[in-house]
Length: 299
Image (cartoon, rainbow, N blue to C red):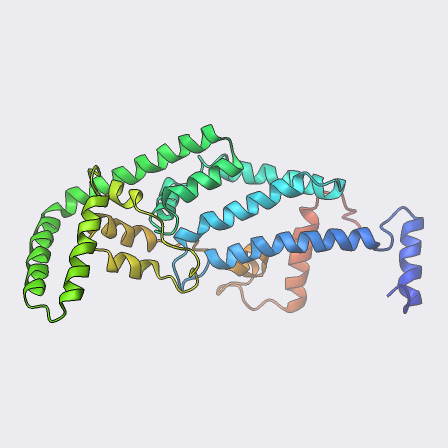
């Protein structure tokens, strides 16, 4: 624009001479690139949180961890402009989330109920963001919440669980007797033997679930968490019921466009006949009135 348009250069030259904002230089564009990269993380997180076609509860902590890591990285920047803006973002982040203690603990439970993560992912993330002492404290809080939830479901569903255990055992024994493939029968019995060995010393389903290795995260795109709990519902009869209820809760009920646009707050079903000019005036007036830099209302 500076090279092609004389009006552009003269306009900004006058602005600069009168103490206003001058030309956009290389540093300005570099700052834009940095912020576009960071805001893309926030935008992608909001799109994930506001989706209604797949489970979002178990993904929230991944997004929060990535955003917080980037805020911490940008806060160490040598660029004063970036550093000042990120400092404000960091204070807002801490005000909303704190050191993890301000987040609803049930959201952490959803992360633990993801067989690819369990408590190990939480401990890893907390130890990277905060001190190990904070990580240990938060892990104990989350585990306590999970135990309370399990105890509630166990009290409600314990009669059904016992009946299911008896019927499942009968069904499996019947299968073994009339099994046409003896090798498959041996493999099935060996798997049950390994499960029994692995669960020695585990007093309940929680201990058994957390003691087992995490599922591989390599096939994350194709992994269906509800499918996993359905396939393992015989092994975790109480825990699978709580997982079904917790994971079904959406992280956010706010549409993603409302997080980045005020249009939805101005145009609604009861106030939808405003002209485009009036909508523009309302949006601009609100932005000017909330601006940190004082403006001339008369102008």
